[in-house]
Length: 182
Image 1 (cartoon, helix red, strand yellow):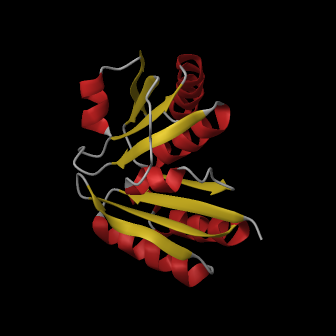
Image 2: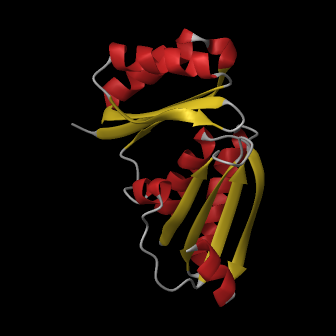
Image 3: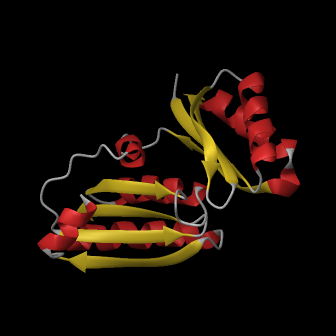
């Protein structure tokens, strides 16, 4: 059985809760997160077998398509995504800091998966629309060239959907910045 995650992001809370309910009624998936995020949007992240997650996300997409912002299905997601989402990543030295911002919540998780699989980087944090007026960001660390490659590849994937907002890579960030973000 292949482990997968999927996510839906809706403009309204009622559409999101309705879609999340349809997800768990459609296939055997586990809700990892289901909640309201800024500015009154609703997200749900589910996990399970790849075919079950795909069926659940497809059903959610069809539930209220006029309210859907974005969605994804990731088969075999990079394991570092989960600690980054929940703020439990263990990070030592920060040689370089990569930052990528998006206009939505779903695309940042896909971008993080792509970044983690592109180069030898560590995900520090994924901030998913909480307190961000619906925007999201990710922070990564690694060697400068690795961060640059990972951010560039992630930026390209986000840009395809028109959700790219901004990005940068900082070589040797100051200790005060590292203390503030870790």
